Amino acid sequence: MMELICPAGTPAALKSAIDAGADAIYCGFNDETNARNFPGLNFSRDELRKGIALAHARGAKILVAINTFPRASAVEIWQRAVDDAVSAGADALILADIGLMDYAARRHPNQRLHVSVQAAAANPDAIAFYAETFGARRVVLPRVLSVPEIAEITRESACETEVFVFGGLCVMAEGRCSLSSYATGKSPNMQGVCSPPSHVAYEQTTEGTTSRLGGFTINRFGASEPAGYPTLCKGRFSTAQGAGYIFEDPVSLDATTLLKGLRDAGVTALKIEGRQRGRAYVESVVRHFRHALAALGSGSEADIASLKPFTEGQASTLGAYRKTWR
Image (tube, rainbow, N blue to C red; front, side, top):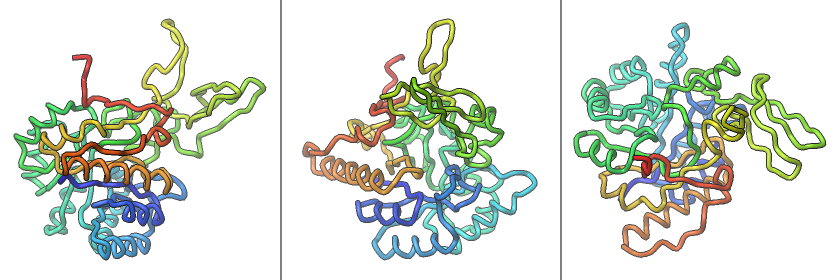
């Protein structure tokens, strides 16, 4: 049975994920060492220790994401995060930076290491490098691969594979986003903030709502149209070819219908995106996939509710898993 890996941006969300049937929960510290560094999210050192104790008492694992790239002048912040996560009893560390992976492997040789999706390891040679050099046990594959490609990678790799099955998508290559940092000066891959709230602004007019990021107009919504959060990759812009979502539509990945194919491809674990989402999202999405996996294991049809209310833009896609353009 494939493991179900679930997000938690708060201690309350962590408990909800456990209650809903998560096999493992991934979370991060409340600083720039993780890629969801938003105010009011993530864990203090004490909260992480308590969260790990709760998870272990309930038979679940905790994976700590330290998946941003350290600043040259402050490497010790990331190294301290590694040390503190290991001390707290983390079941695995999710790392992206090669230097930090080397530090963790040397300083804590018995600690289980996972390669973050931010590392963009998308072929057997890249995965073999992490496994052979640092002893990495699992790689989270980028969301640019089809199911047959995942199957081929899994066959050729000694490393476990983990793939996303639900949540937000990004038009940028994993770990290589420059759009948000261009507009705000803060990098998702270094400071862990995509469209930081400090740079977000909304203007209400008689015609509706205008959203801006770092002074750039991202979108305009009609009076009765829900106003989405402004990210450059999902903004509407005017071009010579017309106006609309030029980079990417606001839509969420939902791979519920592909679970059998992913299992047959040899995937070890399924990951739900959404550490910035609330408890209702976590509980509902985790229960959805728990039921779907149970049905898959028994060979029966899954009687599961739609996840449409929890998708971005009330729409979903199979993403690159089914590359229909080839």
